[in-house]
Image 1 (cartoon, one colour):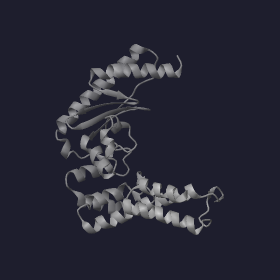
Image 2 (cartoon, rainbow, N blue to C red):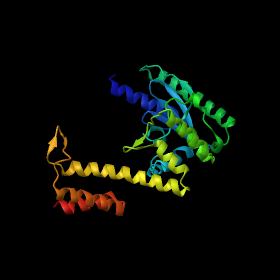
Image 3 (cartoon, rainbow, N blue to C red):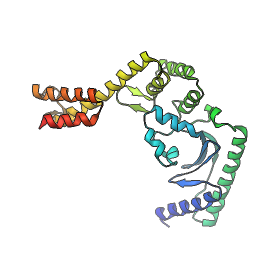
Image 4 (tube, one colour):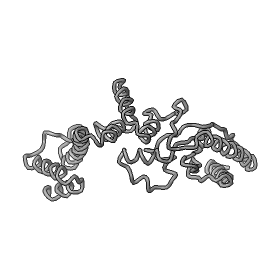
Length: 270
């Protein structure tokens, strides 16, 4: 049996057993939604059962300006690059074997134990809206995003801002970044201060500046014919080319649209 056949055997057996316990399967995960929680089994080096409130990813995607993710399949909450890590509830083990009946027995035990763990968890935490993760059982959430989402969901924005301020003071570098100057904490601060006109104005300027920087880089790359060491030479542009770039950036500022700026670039560059 080659590796492809073995992986198919495992996936088929896992799918068959998981359905008996109400789990759905996608790639390396099995998941289910119960009482406002997203429970997910990750079958990687070992097997981990995790949990997070269903609202957590929705809130994070709103803050991160990726609301389109809400319309994606539920499995994205377990496999998506910008999905939140869950709290680990239990860890299991599946031993390698090509014996189908032995694999079925092992998966049967995993899903049986996971279902029992889920039932116990819900009994101890019946209200998903007021659940706060045990951060000692969080492995990959270095930015504490699940905890911050729980705080925001429960109206504790001031505490969130204090946590971010302390993290900034300690030179914390966020895992999720956007452009040159923004990261997940930038977006969270803007969300927490969304009703503060002064903060909204400042964050709006920073957000627009980041987009202009990305647009400028695109313009330079698209118009540069003379390159230095494989990179665009910023000193090789004629006044006309500089005017085209300036007009395109101005179009973006006025229209707030990359498409509008790109059309302006194409029209003027012809």
